[in-house]
Image 1 (cartoon, rainbow, N blue to C red):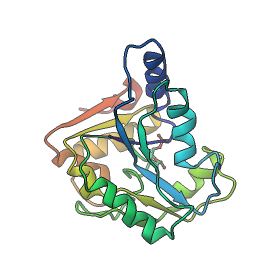
Image 2 (cartoon, helix red, strand yellow):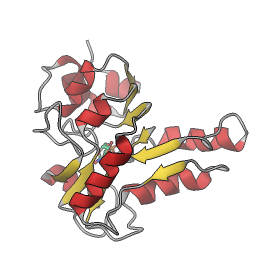
Image 3 (cartoon, helix red, strand yellow):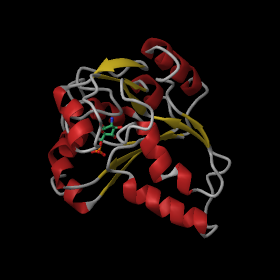
Image 4 (spheres, rainbow, N blue to C red):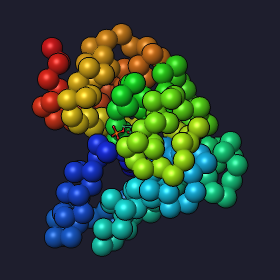
Length: 207
Ligand code: GLP
């Protein structure tokens, strides 16, 4: 499965940790592939996606899944993206993704087409700011690596997690607006097994 970071999945990860602790579930036999990562942040930076996933989910699990992080520390960014894509090429059963304020999925920022591949991307000013202001990054990252729309749409199933009133307008656009690169999340509607898991404030604007 592909897993996202950001603020949205926190409650889901906390619940999973509790369930794993009580024996109600286990991720011990799962293989996890990270959705995206910043380029240029030092290892263990609090905003790093791998650090967050470890902190919020993996470290709390009794039996750890096998985790494919993005190799930004030991490979150059283009090679790290290629290596990650090779992992994704084996196929993803379940892609869990969040929704960016500008409609991004992973770091498939606006402008990403339906076949956008796994790659190094230049982050939008908004995404750069979120890294420092909301996630506590030690510096503003200029770029990131993301699984491509192509790999996400080739998954057997997709769950889109959306939380909070600030996401209501972009969720409406993603689900009810035109399918276009201006809102990459709108491409998710092409998938036959898309489940949108939104809380009430996020879903408030849906028709
Ligand atoms: C971030 C990440 C995405 C995340 C999305 C939403 O920048 N690149 O993986 O899903 O934007 O983040 P949040 O849940 O914090 O709103």
